[in-house]
Image (tube, rainbow, N blue to C red; front, top):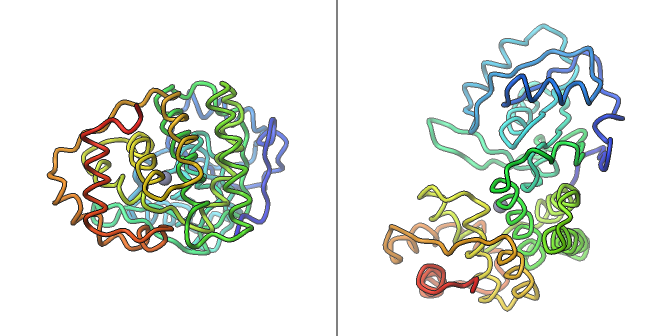
Length: 312
Ligand SMILES: [Zn+2]
């Protein structure tokens, strides 16, 4: 599955013909989004800019109510994952189509059937065919200005998703095609300092892993995320160690990417045995791992992550 329409490359967001009476949903501030909207050349629109990161179901309900009966023709999610997730869930409730325009690149969320929404202050990863974009626009115009730290975390996430997705038990020749191409573009972008290639690489990664799944690297990473480590950063060591465990063809190349991005080793406050208890029930990731993973394997991987430097 992938969006009905995909527009990508330089000027993609500028040349796109936006439907009249669209509702733009963004999480950024007017000084930033006014520039974006100017660039897009969109004129007949409404704007919702009160969305905050990690959107809750209450925000979805509130936007739905606020714009009911105002003949909104489509939602435009403009910004990071949160803006897009809001549009995905709204569109599922109302049936109004959605156009997704990422401005921070890495998750490939504009390509996938996944959305993260909080219910009672708990983030929940949801999957639904209704979350798929009617159109996705991937334009490197939005890249400059992204702080280095956010960019390197996103780049690492995209490379981890592409390579884990390639190895996943759910992969097939078609998804592998996207994952492999994504990894090669991302590797070129990172190793040879061509950041303008990151958005396209992340987009292909989204199509590839979105139709297969991520695996052990992602499963290991969540205990670090729970202690506040950014997602992409936690994947630097976790996916490297997972690739080694799986004897992945991407092990050395992924490690080189992390070295180039200068990621520091990870620490874990929680004892390794306790962390393993959190990881083991994550069947969604572990069952799709190319090699069977036992509790002892998880502890061994965690030990390697925190007690030796897997990126050295
Ligand atoms: Zn990820």
